[in-house]
Length: 506
Ligand code: XMP
Image (cartoon, rainbow, N blue to C red; front, side):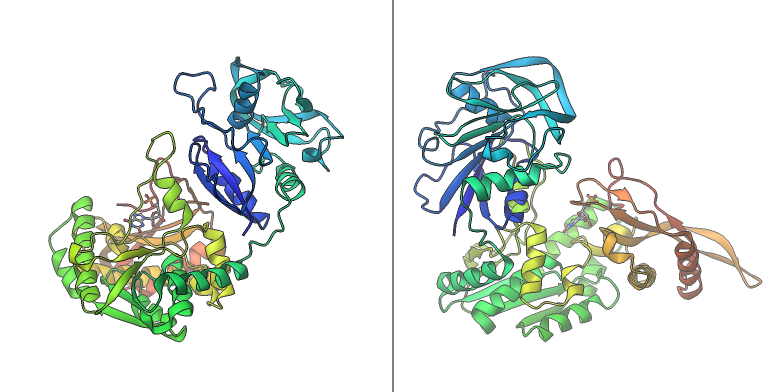
């Protein structure tokens, strides 16, 4: 399949470039700046990303791109454009002031195919400290803004383009058009990357990779592992065994509901109810990190014991997706987020790893799930933390507290769904506060728990804002919770954003 290669020089927006290219129905791979796949016959074009570095800095990345220029069309974005300029004898200098934000195109060359359909006055987004003060000989000016003369330049013969602004961010209002001009118009993408084509190709590849062998997959009920399971189920049927562990900290009825969803989809799934083991291991423990560690290591123990019973399995499948892999280590060496996986399988099991979703972004995983005929409630389910309700019960976790929290959470989630609010919220849940407060019900004094509700909007969980919920909705919700859940006499709403507050309380 045709693909665009995005060489990553460490910009925060490299992933966004990838997403935009995929939205244009074109497969792409983001690779470290010095790992260009010279032997790959499917490459149709190359994008050089931005970078936090200066091209003239001692530690700047200057890979040898001689087999890339003049062989493929190349688009340099920000640092990528500066690198092109630097490479071909232009001049890049520190512009004194860093330039961030909105700019308007004051000149656009009518002859440049990269700017087809893009007009003067169009808003673009800048984010740079250096400027291209002279474009290389043989290159032409393609666009300027009021403050940056050399905002874009090109060499038609060599099929090289550079843009100082960021077409991949939504604030560059015609950025998508520019990327389409490059990917489709200039590189000639046939736009063959679709969820259906991904399913067909992947099912074929999985059959080849796995042959007649057996695969184990840890299921969490979340969208990634579920889609991976259905995809594998389609490829190898019963030779896939999914293992779904109930640690007793799931949502109300979630264990039964999720198992039944999987079975309706024809998957071969083993459910392991280890609730009592987890809850007794958590007895008397109130320190958040210790709670997480106990749950994490017991989970691995229970999963391994179950996996060891499946004789002859030679693959361990995981629902790892593309951002899990590229987020875990930035090219500049800075760790952004460590990726957690099932991990810790005993040596003797010697399983090979199978990650069928490793090239997909989250929205693509969802599209693949729909293409596989999975129900929408599985595809659009809110994220839920691995340690479950334990991180929503500050202090000691007891079966009684879990029961109370499950009931509150269930009322909250049902209400969000029935009022049509669920899909606009990234994640919602309840927290059982480790305090009791005085209340009055009928003529009786109560002394019960207070709960906090949390609902946030976000696009990636790295940052989040509290969701504004309608007043009438809040009023009814609070009444319903206090009236129906024995043990609760007060409801609060968490109005903290992330940062500084995390989504989970522990
Ligand atoms: P925080 O609380 O760090 O959460 O703002 C960000 C996102 O990650 C989820 N989360 C977890 N997911 N294992 C998981 O699988 C965990 O230990 C864990 N802790 C937090 C959280 O629900 C939110 O979506």
